[in-house]
Amino acid sequence: MSKIVRLKRRADFLAVSAQRRKCVTPGLILQAGVRPAETAAPPRLGFTASRKVGIAVKRNRARRRLKEAAERVFGRYAAPGHDYVVIARGETLTREFSDLVADLETAMRRLGGKEQRAGG
Image 1: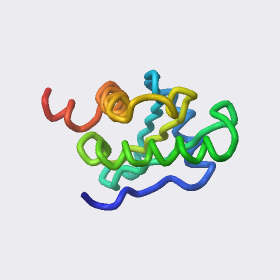
Image 2 (image 1 turned 30 degrees about the vertical axis):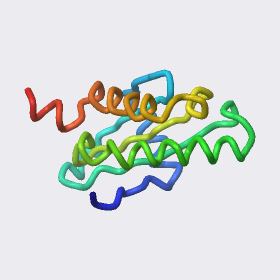
Image 3 (image 1 turned 60 degrees about the vertical axis):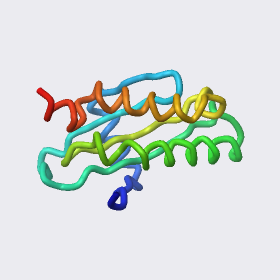
C-alpha cells in the first residue's frame, strides 16, 4: 500500500469539521470533507485525541491504535480529493482491535468511500 498522506495543519482539521459529515461508532468518530479544487488529489488523513480520552500516554496509545487500523482500511475506502479525520474516543483504548478496524470500515462506507461508489 502507498504511504498515507497526513493532515497536519489545524486549518485542515477545521475545514473537515466545518463540512459536518461524520460517522460515530463505538470506537471512533470519523469526519470527512471534500476538497473541490483538488478532486484528483490523493486522500489525506488526520488523527486527534482530546483530553477526554485520558492523559498524554493514553491519548498517544489511542492515536497509535487508530493509525494501525487506518493502515489496514484507508487504501480500500478513501476517495481521491477527500480529507478524513479520525477522532479517538474513550472506548478506543479498550475496544478489541478487530472491532476497531470494523468500526473504521463501517464509518468509511457510510461516508461514501470509493468501494461504495464503485459498487453502485
